[in-house]
Length: 114
Ligand SMILES: [Zn+2]
Image (cartoon, rainbow, N blue to C red; front, side, top):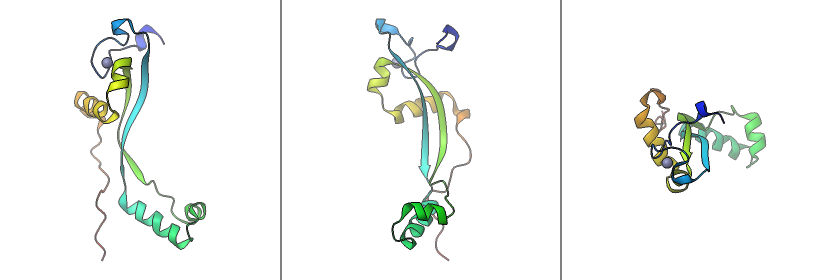
């Protein structure tokens, strides 16, 4: 990794190798939300296929069951990588870069039956 690729830790803002610790992490973190309508359709197809998931995927629409809300490319020092949760990290990165969040949130509550 080149010098120009290094940046401060996304967890604490310190250098990646602060406190003379030479181990650090580069990770892609993303937050997803389940699409309940797609999950219900997939479950219904699986029931129709008597629990055969492979056949249900083949016969059904094979929709995405979750949608990505946000994704970050993250650099972390060893201390932050081992002490912070992924949810904490994503919230911090969202706060520092709100442009990463999309305006298009997937439906969380399925439409009521008609
Ligand atoms: Zn850190």
